[in-house]
Image 1 (spheres, rainbow, N blue to C red):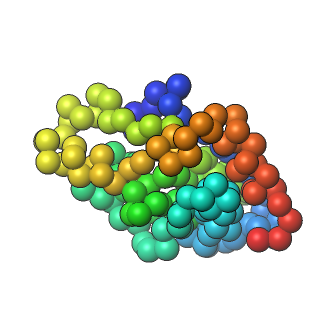
Image 2: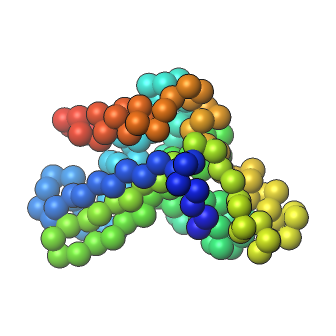
Length: 152
């Protein structure tokens, strides 16, 4: 994974074991969060969807994780908008969500042939391309509102 601090927005979410949102099944655990993230982007007019299929390693066979797709991750027209990882312990699940303002391969491009690099770029998008004028802090506030909303 290539991270450029000025182009990445991270949102971490913790769900304690026993919370109504906690799920024993790792795949199911992504569902509620993905639906809320998609709803946050939909409120901005973005046609965001959760990836409902199994893990798809993508054109780089998982080397570039933002070109892969996993349960609950957010896509727009088949391109990943938000990636989600999950770490689990006895006390709960920690979800780390990443959205690029603008997706760039950076030095990872040197690990790929030109064709694969182009396919990877076609599999990812940034929120800046879809939500012009939205700041990173505005995005965090919007997503936080949807994540913490009752129900779901």
